[in-house]
Structures are given as C-alpha cells and as structure tokens.
Image 1 (cartoon, rainbow, N blue to C red):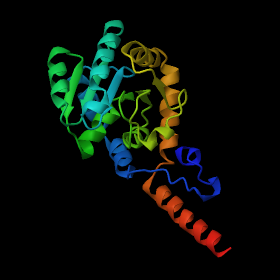
Image 2 (cartoon, rainbow, N blue to C red):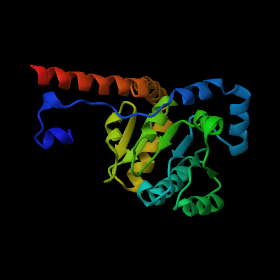
Image 3 (cartoon, one colour):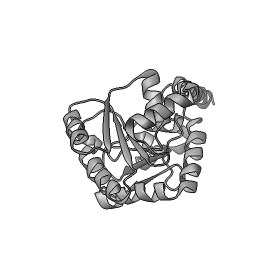
Length: 227
C-alpha cells in the first residue's frame, strides 16, 4: 500500500510477505506432552482461555507500560487472568519489577526452542500493544490471535492482522486495550474461531512461500523486460 501511495505502478510490485522459519515452532508445540502443558499451567496458575502472552524484545517502543496498566485492569475484572512475559532487552527491568508487584504477571526471561514453544502452547492470545513485526508470524504459527494498538512503528507485517478475524487493534489506551482482552476471554467461541483463523493464516507466511513469491517477482520482471 505504501509503495502504491508513492506512485509506483501496481503491476511492478511483488508482495513477498516477509516471514521467518516457523515450522520448527509448530512441530515443538505439537510435540509438547499434555502433562508438560498441565504442569506449566499449574506452576503459573493458568486457566485455559484466560492467558495472555507478551513475546518479543523489551524496549520502549513495545508499549510495556501500556501492557502492564492494561493487564492490571483486566485482572481487576477477571482474577483468573494471567500474563506471561517472554523476552529481554533494555526495558526488561519494567517487566521484572511488575512481576514482583503483580502476582498475575510472570516474567519468564528470554526463552528459545522447546521452552518458548511451551510458553506459547499454554497461552491463548498474544498481547503486543507496541510495535509489531515478525512476532505476528510466531503468534499465528502457534494459533494465537494478536491484540495490538494503533501506534507508530509497526513493521509491514502488521498487514497480516485482520481485525475481527485473527486479532484486533485498538486505540493506544489502557481502557480500550484491556477491554479487548476481556471481551475475548469472555467469549470463548470467538476465541476459538480467532485461534483457528490465526493458525490457518499462519500457514501462508512461511519462508518457502516468501522465497517462491520473491522468485516469481524476478521472473515477472525479466519477462516484462523482454517484452
């Protein structure tokens, strides 16, 4: 859309759909034994359908303050709500401090491989109120709808978000953002639909599909040049 708005011809644009290799993540989530998932839920007091996940680098543009203010509002209305925070970065002290003062917030640090997959497997939606980038590919690979806000700084991958279908985007304020989380938890049928759609959409955003689109774009350009 941005390239079109800059006046570039539509027939010379290739939409590659940036992605990362998420096949390993899918396999690790599928391989997680049910008893391991249950043990993790017991460890952090998680209730199915009431667990949000922050996953990403922790820096100012990620909206950690907004996330934590919103999480506090959600927990006041729904005491079963839990927020898992996975990641590291210059703003991690905010997450650590809140995890001490908010017993419903659990900072797990930077996780990779099976540990990251396990945290995603026991979560119900991804909460990223700040800049969204390739984390949306991980979210959809895990079948997690994504909730974010209208902020400057989103990567082009935000185009994968289809509000009302595989996630939602609200104003960057604690009240509307917390309400979006509450509404999703209070409507389990909608949560299931959004999770299923996120998982289905995630299959479009793969490294192989990206490579195919990139290659086809080159072939189209060569064909156009010859003609």
